[in-house]
Amino acid sequence: MPADDTSDARLKDPHVVAVLVYAAEDRVLREALITHDKPAEARQMRSFSDETQQVTLIETPCAASS
View 1 (cartoon, one colour):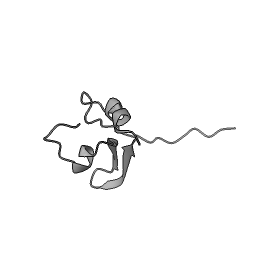
View 2 (cartoon, helix red, strand yellow):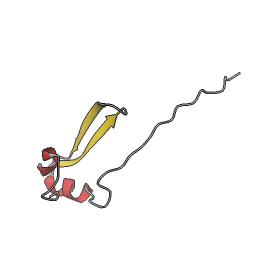
View 3 (cartoon, one colour):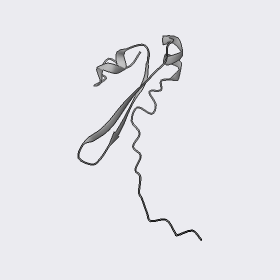
C-alpha cells in the first residue's frame, strides 16, 4: 500500500501501480492510470524509492535526409 500521506487518492487503490502525468509548464496535458488486475502483482510493481520522476523533452530540428 502507498504511504498514508500520499496526495493522490487514486494511489490507495490496491490495483494501481502508478499515475503517469504528461504536463506542459503551465498545465496537465494527459494522465494515465497504470493498473494490474492482481493487487499482489501491483504491489510488487510499485516503488517508493522513485515516487516522482521528471522527464523533459527537448525537440530540435532533424537534419534533412537525402
